[in-house]
Image (tube, rainbow, N blue to C red):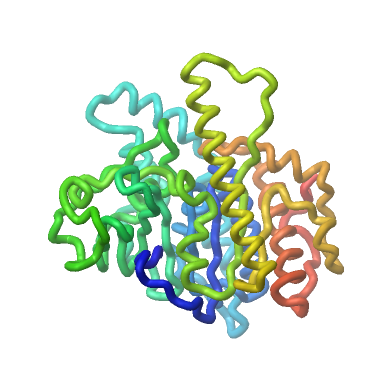
Amino acid sequence: MPDDKSKKKQPERGIGLCLSGGGYRATLFHLGALWRLNEFGYLPKIERYSSVSGGSIIAGWLGFVWHKLDFDGNGKASNFEDEVINPIRKFATLKLDVGIVLKGLLNPFRSSGDMLVSAYRKHLFGDATLQDLPDKPDFVFDASNAQSGVLWGFSKGRMGDYRVGYVYDPTIELSVAVAASSAFPPVLSPIILRLKESDFRKGSGDDLRSKPFRTNVMLMDGGVYDNMGLEPVIKRYQTVLVSDAGGKMKPVEKPRQFWGFQAFRLMSLMDNQVRALRKRQIIGMFKDEQREGTYWGIYSDMDRYGVKGALEAPESSTVGLAGLPTRLWTFSNLDQERLINWGYAICDAAMRKHVDQDLPEPTSFPYKVGVA
């Protein structure tokens, strides 16, 4: 998770994977990427999974079922489809966001954030806590702290941020951590943690080590601060893999003047800026050889990778998939399969181009529909 601001260390040998936000669209796109990484035998090689929003749904599930995965000597889980793919595909048929928002508006005693926690608890994680995650690899779920203005991380080892401080070995529910990471403002946030000042490690935290910063922690979607979940990985590991299913802001000739529409346009502008800056940051680090690894995105052009045996994924088709909604709203089986196929194909090309050219070529898409 995010390291203390004052501690600047040289990156250590190891691999970190960043899974961006983007609702169910991101969850399904990343599902395809993880499918291909599993075939490569890479899942156990990854030291840290850092995730945001829709990426945290699949990362949370992967961590939750990690102990059930049957890894062979090459690091491939033979039951990956049964334990990871099929349950997440089923979950992604649920229509969550509109129902949660409406219930939140009608219920003065429970916020939409609380209801998002309940949905994750009911349909995914039960009463599991962060302590039910594996010791290795490390799973970090990124949220934005509305009070401190920096990234708040949840992991098995600790949770917190460098300004407020850290709680070690937290027993927070996994549903709460994933919900905080995916509580997009203003409709699904905030998630409020009720803590005690004594919960925090003595001496941790820079300048906000008091009430209410430590007792009523107000969190929202991690994408507000870092939509790719880069920070917890680039601050520690030499090899960085980035799966980006985030969107692009569409130009509008005549933006609406009503304040409500302006607010949503403003949030889109801010998200677009954060995403662009983060992407330039990691691409720049690759070019300057500060880090090894690769980036693949839902808007990537397969032809630019130029690898032998790449799966057929024409940009005319993949742009359509990239334009699907970034909501917690059901996709058709066809769109689910196309999104998974696209994540699988572009991850394959990026890994074989920039990480290991000896990795095997794919034989086919996971699903026969391709990406068209």
